[in-house]
Length: 348
Ligand code: CP
Image 1 (tube, rainbow, N blue to C red):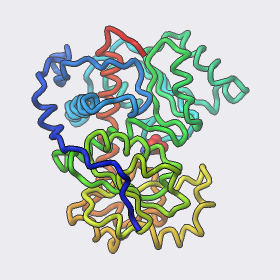
Image 2: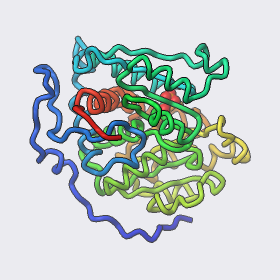
Image 3: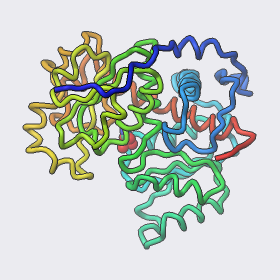
């Protein structure tokens, strides 16, 4: 049974119009996209929690302007020439690491991928010692993924360059939320007033947390759907509606965002079996039919096909999963450009 929290519905603002009404200026590169007038005022991107609505719209607009760069034959906009980017991933990643690397290279940065498995972390070096060592090499930005919530913020306090959170524990994954929002906005031409249902392992999901914060800021009607064992305490304070029945939760949704069961965070112990989970919470054609006929199907990846989503739906006409990956490169180019190219700067 679903229930709503007490938060009154927010007034719907047309953020697309708001963004368009802002004057544009050149990025400084004649071949480059226009960027907004307001310089990005943060040194780091640690979470969606630090961004207001205008800053979110600004990053989405910047990302939208980056999309053509990746679609042209020579995929280069050298606004970060001479800058150094270090990717420091303490947890596995396919999409985030690859797209940050591609984003940095498409902007002309020197990109270094630290392999944590073969680095001195494997010999017992601490996170802080690793950070200060890398900082001594004068990077301009460090992209960090870590299994511990708060680890990226701690690292940001030890270095003199910008830091981007590429996912910290179950806390935040800001660039994932931005790329999800960009994908939705491209299809629906707006965010305000849409109903987005996020379904699955909410309790362990940094993707869900960052998305809920972003979507709330953009006046989206947010729903979460999960068995009670996968709903975190206090979820009703950040999601407008909470459902344990998937069909009720999907009713009339504009967007269905599926989440991976996070076995590495022991989600498997919170469900009777993958088969039963799929029966009640796996997205198949029958359940998807409760959403709007033109509802978008999204998944941040990696997917457990046949556990949280029917492969036919993941690869079907309503799926925008591969487009999310493409938007990931654009969003990460925008974030790097905003943090590095755009800054005279700055306070943390
Ligand atoms: N969505 C996401 O963060 O994927 P990766 O773990 O492959 O980076």
